Amino acid sequence: MTRLEIGLLGPLVVKVNGAAIVPTAAKQRRLLALLAAHAGREVGMLAIVEELWAGRLPTGPTAAVQTYVKQLRQRIATVLPPDVGPKAILSRGNSGYRLGTTDTYVDARAFETGVARAMRVLARGEDEEAARLLADRLAMWRGRGLEDVREGGLLRAEALRLDEMRLAALEARIAADLRLGRHAHLISELTALTCRHPMRENLHAQFMLALYRSGRTSQALKVFRQLRDASVRELGIEPSRRVQELHRWVLAGDPILDIPLSVPAPAPVSVPAPVSVPAPSLP
Image (cartoon, rainbow, N blue to C red; front, side, top):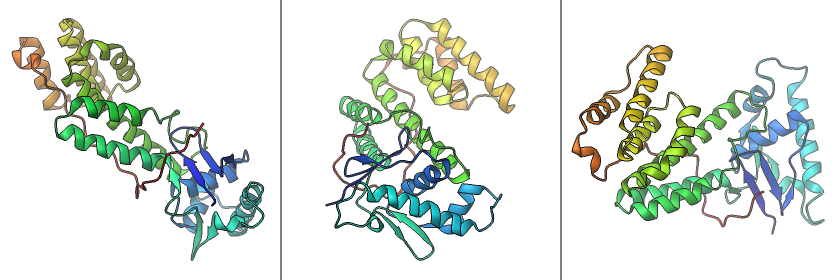
């Protein structure tokens, strides 16, 4: 049985029967990344051409794509048993190409499946289990999504979507930890996160709450001021009403902040067609 494993949660990983097949050549790598991001589904020739050349077409782009596919198949063939052809892995469809099948392992889909389960647990109020499940899923990440692939429009959108999915799951895990009274342990993590994401309101609100509960009211107010300054400077708007209300509660020392509440986290962004398959060990 031929096994195909795809890793999108960090540098691109594509393995056939445990052997890596990701090429170093830029165009081949981008083509493989595009097919991997849509594993099990056909990617049309028009989408492939747009991703590889972004409107600056060479002479005969279709022939060039066919050459790249041939080169990828040659790499795949080197790690397959003699009785299996590379077209079983990288096949031609009606109008494009398909990598793998619907039961191909894709780490992004496994991540979504696990996060969806954790969110159901979180909705039931089982914060300890939800925090554990979310931390386990977040540990799957090896860096930024597709971080070593030069991106055209489609891959750039996919990389941004993957990173948004990660942030949403992270916010949900922090929300569970806040309800569990782990505010002091969250401060260093939230310090780094708010520096990396200066416009991310939810992270700043969670940081304010963690600081306030740790007896650091003045710092909580400073976090609000920094968020407000960035929001007004970059967007020309005030922070949301929800964050302004939290600011008023901190100013007033409102007892509502002492109960096990947390700043709600948005639902993680979904990825296509999650598949339930055992998770292999990606590097």
